[in-house]
Image (cartoon, rainbow, N blue to C red; front, side, top):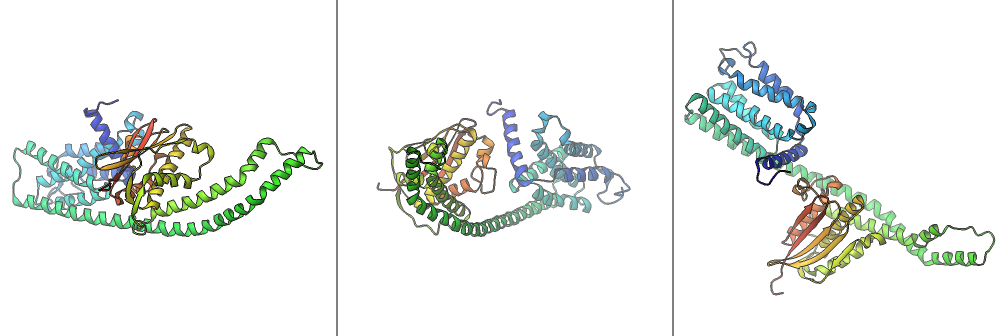
Length: 440
């Protein structure tokens, strides 16, 4: 285990961040490695780029190209790395990007800033960075690569080109990158909104189709429950009097039958609740459609627990200490859905781990009242915690997805926030901060 603050710990933490970026961005590692091998090897030779051409290959550094070739070759053969080395692929990928794009092309440009070919190659790194990594990483990689190239140039040549032309070129490209970044960010935002609108439309259609049979089931069960006890009593009376022709029902099966309609009704009602939760999670204007009023957290928790329709054994997992109730301003429906989301996730983790309980209690802070929601099931890793409240479809085993992003949006809407404290394989505790109402 690395000590916090040690170089190995910092590198490991960076590696986790890079790994998450690779997972989210899914860059084409193999095509990049192949293109790099082609460019850095073949384009060195004079029959591909004449020595006399402006910015030609004659004055380029063979050593720099060999390093780039070695990095690209390592990237291409990454699947053959030793198992212990595989985990460091994200760091290796970012090092390769820094060297092969901003560092290499900036250095070549500084060698001959008036060469048109090198100027074109230097300009292409901006597009490559925006395509291959997220925007924040693109800025960082460009800055680090350019500074490193300028430093190596100064160490090798003993001087640094100070002509206004070079600085103007750098300034233009940095501004250009910023403009591209904003365009890409806006495009990504529009794509996300489009996906959410599609999910909302599809969800509404599915909800409509599902509610009809669920309503029919609930109505049928409510009617059957009125008369089913008559059949139960009749069967028991017939068995006691040993009437001929009455088939025996095993005791365990009979116990199941006696509660069958209650179980079906509970699941059907929860199906409706679950549909409401899904629709709330994808609707963007849900906050405008819900009125804000003064509420008590105890009343919201009580209604959420009633609404969830637990199986008897699952209800025993929950321990609620309601000693410190408090008032807050918000939407009762939205807060109930937040609590239902947390309940659903916690019970899923308990069932998955075959262990754990849920503890709910309230405390008072200086400016906020805090609702604590803790389960002692699987916990979560630091990597999962960092993406916990991001709005995207994810693996439920990682507690990531629309549900927790919805919880974060609701808490922001009431002027508060949601945090998560967790220890892997031990517990996960969500803290919901509600602003205090002045005068209370």
